[in-house]
Picture 1 (spheres, rainbow, N blue to C red):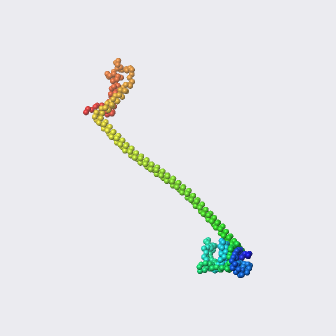
Picture 2 (picture 1 turned 45 degrees about the horizontal axis):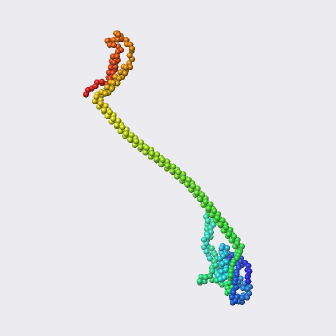
Picture 3 (picture 1 turned 90 degrees about the vertical axis):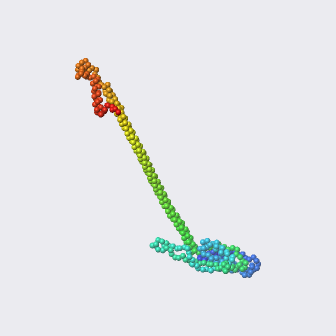
Length: 361
């Protein structure tokens, strides 16, 4: 036989009521003694369902709901809820103790408490009151259970499932608001991340532009420094070159000066030697050779002049056939020219203080 139950109204640990749909399948005993004892106890299948199986089903479902909050169920505890329901249907309901516990949370609530302050002010405290249902444990550390009464008659549970949970409207609205808030937080978080990325991007762009300007300025600085250093080295090289050239010219001038001194000394010595030699020659022969050369030059000059003189073809004299003689001497003859030559020679010798006599040694 089977019983078709509608949705069961349950209250979760956090005082949220909900309509729960669940199913359970049972197996009756196979041995005759257990079956007859069950038949004598319940008399009919309807009594068995109405007085034993259905109440045990509802009790176990409610006990399971008291172990978990609705938010915990809808936050990922569905599988655990179904597992605990089947475990208690098979092995008995846990004996529990419900306690209020003050816990410390890690979440710090912040808000702007004073509009004149631009900082986030903390408010409230980090304490909260929570309800905990703890399983009672035996001395051996095992959970204490209330055994299922139908198990005494050999009835066992084949399967137990929770198929649907529908919380009340207020919880749905709260969950919707929480979901919206979570969505808003997610969007705000994404926007914050985006803004942070934009800020980091702007910072990165600014740093990149600064780095580019610094690199450009560094390149310009290095180029200017290199050019200045190059000009400096070129100036130093040119100065060293001029210095070396001046030193070379100075050394060359010194060498030329020494050479000039040596040449002048050589000329002086040669002149002194020549003068001494000339003096020695003059002293040895009374300048005979020079006097002879001078005499020959004078005589050559007069001889040349005498040879080129103009002589008339006819010479007229004062008396006689030879042209006449004045004072007993002929006029216009060669003797007159020779006499004039001798007189002029003597005159030039006097002017030059020229002694034509040769001294004897």
